[in-house]
Length: 246
Image (cartoon, rainbow, N blue to C red; front, side, top):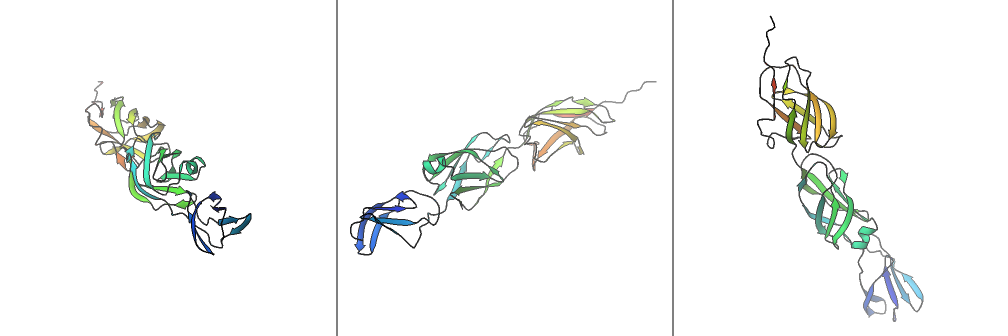
């Protein structure tokens, strides 16, 4: 090789740390991402290209914090692992994060190569996998890594209705999921037909015919229910007592 003036790997300059023979040199690999990166050597303005390409190791994911959050998303999560690339790779849009089927937004580099931050998407459900893609290389899944919080019911209005059914209930709270998520509402053991979705904090349903008092209202969203988080006695629905008119 003589005295090479410069060497690059995938277009990025590397540091030549020595030659071992006339046909071999040592190159300190620069920061980078991706696969099949060509190696070029410049000797006295003569440029040679290696017939063999170099690939960086694919990313791996070891943790996500926090591991749960509200269904409306919009909060920052930190994903840790290895081979995430540097801040420039993130800025160039080469790094992406998915939680289950949905992509995080606003990916930024927290610690080059080992930690990234992003904004969690809205969703519902539990035990979602987390994956990171860096320059088209996809990490193995970190399984059962993230869950959305259970629905929280804070208000039922009205709390009384006719035994014939047909009363429109407005339910307020949090973590009711996105519009596309599956949900159902129960009054005790019977279903209250969902008729409206306003947001992650409000939905409406129509009561079925029934009798009795203090029926617990329970919301189920993508397999998670409000029974554990909504225990107040005011979160109940009662049918009106019989009325004798003559």
